[in-house]
Image 1 (tube, one colour):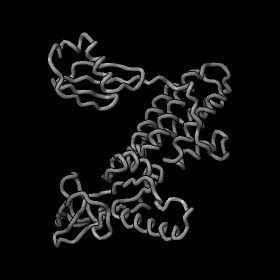
Image 2 (image 1 turned 90 degrees about the vertical axis):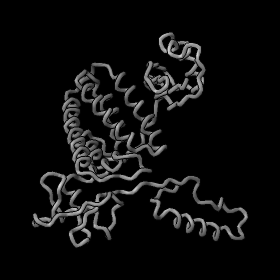
Image 3 (image 1 turned 120 degrees about the vertical axis):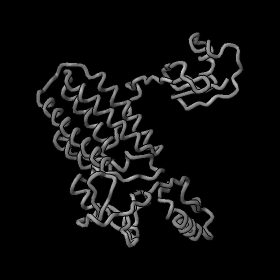
Image 4 (image 1 turned 45 degrees about the vertical axis):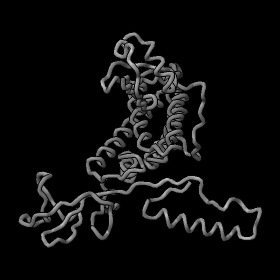
Length: 318
């Protein structure tokens, strides 16, 4: 699997193919000369560009603003700055952000989390101070949640039911693993927000100590590729200092996720159908025709076209 920015991918692929072909020369039993089965071209990190009155590029740290609309050269309130389009960060245009300063202000984990959460990895990332702050706040929230879990572990609870927690953890393993394979990193970040919302409510209930530690360890392991510093600190505090392993899915404990599909007729919402498992377009249309409430909008009219967003929405053009 080759992963690389669009500006480098072509030459990298040419070089790698050249070397593989060269090594294969006169070796009939050599492995396939094609080094990669898949190509994934990632987006670039973008930032607004700035110029002074002499048309010279300015670094973001060289400008200031009071209202977020009008920008001036720092310490020169009479010299207005021209705002250019958002472009991929480059030293020549000076639209870069100093990583050392950002890491000092927010921590490396928050930077990683923001870049991964901003948009799908094939799209460009629009650098945003507000986005950075949001990621930083999430990490602080999770740390406070962690302290509550540590407190609960210290209570030595043996009673309680962990079935819901077991089910949630296994469903999370399933989701994160599949999203990793599909490069849906921003969706994984959304999964972690769901995890926070679930845990903050669940830890109020009685949960056996060992079960809580086991499930929490698995959740932290899933989070570790994205926020490694936070998760290692949390794992250390619950006494898990051994080598991390990717959690193994127990299919028996998976939650049956319901798929709620919005049904539109000529672009207007006419109903909402729920299904226990994924459903194909043809089968979905059959179910719509069986539904008395939705079918009255179709009556005996012919369906000319259907637009189906899998397990989310279908729009029937009649």
